[in-house]
Image (cartoon, rainbow, N blue to C red; front, side):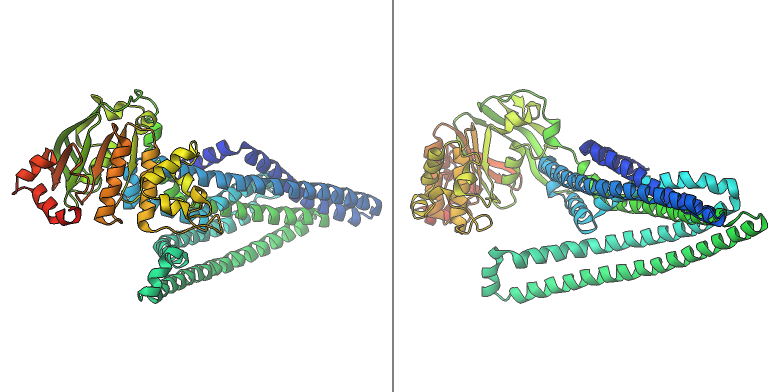
Length: 585
């Protein structure tokens, strides 16, 4: 049932993307089927007239058939060109559709190995196995062979149904062999998937410039190359074994086809002699039977091809079926600027795991407050940010923004109120300026934010200033910044956004403690009255924040000012701060 529904879904998706493709495909199918039928009937007419001694009429038929064949061939070639162009457009559109889906799905899928595997398999099926392209081309061929079969089968039945029986016996054998071949291919696909993913990973590592320094300093290069070579060889050997296996099936198909041809020729010869049908009828019957048999074989082959590739595309449908948070959240209340945030008895466990990350967590933040969230690694600091950002939904409790559950707000209007810098932030191969604001709406403000985070000297030393590219992907003049400098750009990006809540989730891990403290102080001065949440395993932000939220193993151990927390020398915060205090003296 799933196979049928996915086949229908593929048709509906591709039809919606390009009705033109199917119109061209159907017209091409008619032209190709017409060409085949003209060839079968035309040869019979020419031979019949020659056997009757009517050379003039046979020449007339021959000329007419050649003209029709040329017209149909020209039409076929023209339609093939336009169909291929449309096919490429559909391929690209489907890839874009899947890419857009991955950018919009619930965040929980992006941290779930099962769905990440589905996304990887979908890419593997479309790009490595060409499954989408094969399925669509097989659909076009299906039209052609169906029309040809319908045109010739009536003639064969009228002459002698036994010819049809011979055809169907061979087709049945052909179909059974195709099913076995399809099963073998799917087994190979399942086996090859993990190998191919590892091969792509090691290939990417070897070709990525950022790993080259490590390869030269540490004995990693040879080990990585060995792994790359191992999986590449294994990948190639798997394909070689696959093609060898498919070659054996091709031999079986050929043997079945020759037996089919022998049976058709023999039987048609027999009835032609016993019923005195004449050479023209013999040629018409044999040509029709052979062409019909070929079309039926190809028809069943294409059905098998479609089935096989629909199975390969199953992960792509799983990706498209992922819940789309942004789409689901288009309706809702318009989110107003930050006034208050409250966690009310929040308990949270990541999907697919049993460990409770947050246990009955409650706290509130008022407008303009600067809050530092501290705790040991794994205490739940980053999870709080993910919940505020609506990446996940709590198991129990609720999060209130201005007294309203955050899930009741329109997603787009809600997320516009938040700017965040995550510990695993990403920069892109654009200019420094575009990494702060892709639209570059106010370059002076962009420069000011970059200067505020301590990049003034660096930027002024660059020939292209803030228009310098961050890699050589798009520009030969691209630059390579240190980890700390990249983190400063990410922080400048958050400073630039006109939001009412700013979150810094350990973005300064690559900086030394004094640089971190300096950047946080500059950031605090720039945001002024904006509500800000600082998260760090270091304590540089705690002293200037209004309050400090201390997490310990998923619970709120304390929430108070730095001064008050330091009075409790037996508590977690005092131990954390004093362990690092030498860095801030």
